Image (cartoon, rainbow, N blue to C red; front, side, top):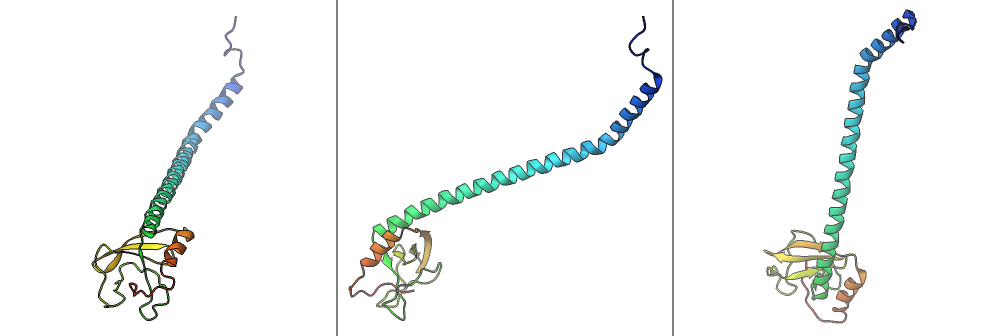
Length: 157
């Protein structure tokens, strides 16, 4: 009884060995290319995960800032008016001086100011600091109503 290998034509064995050798020799480059592709795919996945995490953190931070700003509006922040026209509201500018509407002196540290765009700030050393923003238009409108018809020398910037 012949073994299974002895019954195979030697030409087939030589051909199979040649094909195996070619695959082995060429397979090294293909294997390296495959590893590089996998590494690139992992890097892209990690980058996407990092971007998603940053977006989630930014959203959470914006939500916290919005709540801080809403509380500042509800607690009676002082709206800012133009220094050259006290009938016009102006926007808070970070690190810019906020001046008393009557004396022109910088407002004291700890005062809370707000504007018509939804930005709020705490005054530190006479300038707007610790900014927080809310897009809740109703809260802003309610704050603006506090000044309707009032004779008030509001802070100016």
